Image 1 (cartoon, rainbow, N blue to C red):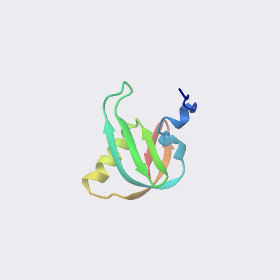
Image 2: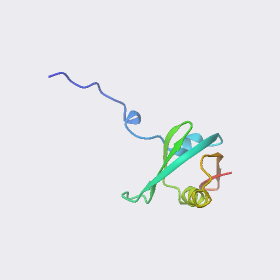
Image 3: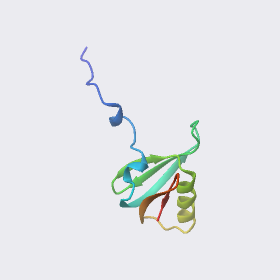
Image 4: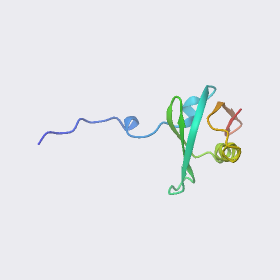
Length: 87
């Protein structure tokens, strides 16, 4: 039986949205999942790949954009105090 090659952990999980801090990118879509102890997991489909966040502020901003049917949208990720948000 042939063994599978060993992968790095970072290759098995979606990167965190915080990796895009101070960058501008396009959010194409998002989905949520409540099956996590950290709260609501938000997975974003961006022009730079798939990213994950648990930020309630980001989720609120995405819901507002969804209500206006404004996807895709160009955003810049900033950190103000302890919170991440789009500007």
